[in-house]
Each structure stands twice: as C-alpha cells, then as structure tokens.
Picture 1: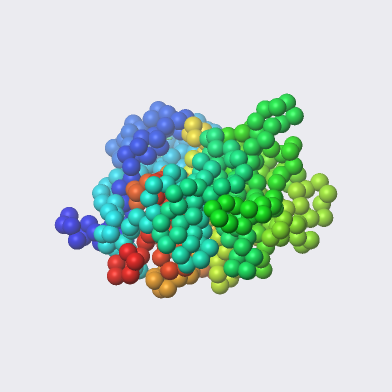
Picture 2 (picture 1 turned 90 degrees about the vertical axis):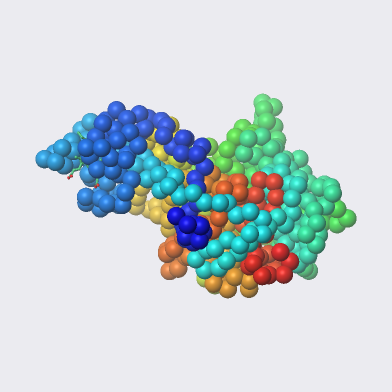
Length: 478
Ligand code: HEC
C-alpha cells in the first residue's frame, strides 16, 4: 500500500494495536475451551480451517451477539458444526462470544500498521486535520486538567501533586496544602474542577482517595471531595464537600475509585465513586461505592435527590449499579449527563445517566471475568438500564468531555473519550440518546487519562508524562 493511502486509512480507522494487548486476550478459561473444542475446525486463531473463519465479516446467520450465541448453541449438525448447547453451560457461551469479538478486533487491528502522530505532524481524520504537540512536559501520570482562566490551569497527578500551569509553563513546585492522599494501586489524586462561578468565588474542587484508619487501625480509603481557593502557590480556605461515613471506607489501595467531577448548568456538583472491587455494593444504596452522586456546591444534599427521603440510603446517590465510572460529562445543548465506565474483560460502557436509575453492575454486563469465565450471562434485565454503547474488547475509557470550541467546528457537540488500555482518543457522535458514530483520532502515544477542551478551542490530552495539545495545523500557538 502506498503512503498516502496508508495515511488516509490512518485517519479513517484504528491504528496499530500494541502487540502486548494481542497476547493478553488469548488467556483464561474461555481460551482453553476454544482451544479444546473449536480450534480443530475453526483454526487456532479463529482464522478458519475446515470450518469458516470467524475473523472476517461474513456470517452464516448474522454477526450480532444473539445470532452467534445461537450458532454455537444449536450448531449446524448437517454441515458439520456440532450443537454445543449441552457441552457448554449456557452462561459460558456468552463468554465464547466475547472471546470471538476480542479475537476479531485484535486481528482487524493487527492488519493495520500506522504511525503514531509525532509532534507537530499533521494527522488526518474524518472531519478535521489536526496536529498533536507537547504543551506541558515533565509530569507523572497526570489525571486531570482544569482551566481557571485562559492563561492559567491546574493539573493533577495521580501521585498526589497538583501544579499550576501559567501561560503554558509548569510551576516549579506543586501547590501546597493539599491533603495527604492514598496513592497505592489505583488510588490517588483524581479530578480538579473550578466552580462554574470561579471568577467570582475562586472555588476549585479536588477529588482524591482519602486515607484513614479503621477501628482496628488498618489503613482504609475512599473517594473524598474538597474545595479550596488557590493563593500564593497554596490551596487555602479548604472545606470538605463530600466525605463518606467511616464505616464505608474500604481497604486502602485497591481498585475502582471513580473520582470524576462535573457541574450541571444549575450548579449541582456530580461525582463518581467506583465499586472499590466490591461488585454487589454497586446495587446497595446504603453504600456510597459504585454510584454517581449529586450535591450542592457546598456539599449539602439536594432535597430532590432520588433517595434523599430514604433514611437507610446514602442521600447523595443520583444513580447506582456502576462499576468504575472515570468519565463524567454534560452535553452542552441537552444538559444530559454521560458516564464512561470500565467494564471487566469487555463490557466498557457509555451511559446516559438519569436520576435514581440502576445501571446494572454486576447483575448485567457485556463483559466476562479476566480469567475468561463468565461473570453473568445476563446482558439485559428489567429495571436495569442498557448502555448507549459498549466495547468488547475493552478500551478502558477514562476521562471524557464534549467539545464546544471554535477551532474544530465540525467536532462541536461530539464526545471525546480518553482511553487507557487501548491508548486511543475516541470521538463519539451522540444523538437522540444513541451513539451514532465513532472514530479513533490517534493511538499509541500512551495511556490517556483525560481529554479537556481549553478556552482557546484546542483539545488537551493527558498522556503518561505530558499534556499534549490538539490543534488545527495552521492554528496559532502550536
Ligand atoms: C467438527 C468441526 C467444528 C467444530 C469442532 C466447531 N465448529 Fe463451528 N462450525 C463448523 C462448520 C463446518 C461451520 C459452518 C456450518 C455451515 O456452513 O452451515 C461452523 C459454524 C460456526 C459458527 C457460525 C459461523 C458463521 O459464519 O456464522 C460459529 C459461531 C461457530 N461455528 C462457533 C464454534 C465454536 C465456538 C466452536 C467451539 C465450541 C465450534 N464452532 C466448533 C464446524 C465446527
């Protein structure tokens, strides 16, 4: 293939999947089961042998999950495909479908080989050309970025530091005065967000995993939200706006803290707490983990919260049944709230988050366990919300934001999603409560923790050691 065509494809499609990812998906119970029962006929990589390939786009009866499940369950005995309905437990057939999807995606990506965008080289995409260039370097795992003024931003690092960035220059020292943060495993300092009326009141909000000791003196932690004002290189006037009850804290370090913040247009603050690895807690409204929460800007509980009048429930809960929501964004025109959450192996979701609703984790999911066994055979259940879209295999979506700037007019109102495992920046078109189009804008510059639209109309992507700026090739300041 010649280079111009390669470039064009790079813009239209995904780019090269890291080889490591290809390895990890061929593991676990489901891979063993495939090797034992299916590889003989369909090939060890699903490429096809005496039986058809499952990597191409031609299916005998349809490529949707239900059709594939049915093909496996009932087979085509007269054509040499046994019925597996008796040999494989029903729920493990779901895991097999996820496995087939993983292998298809990896093979599709493996066939495409593209350059990752080097600094200041023009990259094509469906609607706009853009350049990616380093805006601020010298960071370690930046988690979030917030602009306080056109020339002044705050960036947080997972390891517990926050820095001012003034006129594109990183402060030499981190802000003083932030609380001590648990940074073990997935814990850390998470989101930073200014109050919608920051210009007048100066409030800046921080989410972090708050360390404390339980009754037996063992270290525990949970997501806590504070606000403060930034003055002379320090966070002063600090107030806690959300802190869970001590008995709800869980073993420190560990997984799934959530930690994302968003204000709606009426000035309510929404934030996420992941399930902390305790799936069933997500269904339990007496616990704060596995939820999206809603409070007033000063921490008071709004009287119209869905469980505000239930004395047993955590009154701050807005929605429940979430696994690890690390993306949270309001759509400017509709005021709709979207969350992006990590599924298990497969089953990452984007949800339209509505008051009091149950998003199903861990009762329903499109994913399976990391070891390739089934987590639940249910993908749908009465009383539980379906995602707008889900990803199998996982992309590990993290921060997300709608674009409302001027530099990329055709991207206005599109949802930009940063991803960790897939290391790609995705653009989603959301319309009428559906994801109607998706595009991967770039890939393989490292895990992306957040994507933020700046007041200058550029997009800022938080990469492992830097913040990169996406701007049109001709825009000033690149
Ligand atoms: C003995 C050989 C054989 C084995 C073993 C076998 N298959 Fe098949 N399979 C076939 C054949 C042949 C077809 C195509 C049938 C036809 O042409 O109608 C097929 C079709 C399928 C299809 C439909 C493909 C399509 O294009 O729609 C799926 C899905 C499938 N097999 C999955 C599996 C899985 C999963 C296993 C292991 C649990 C498995 N097969 C084991 C022979 C086999």
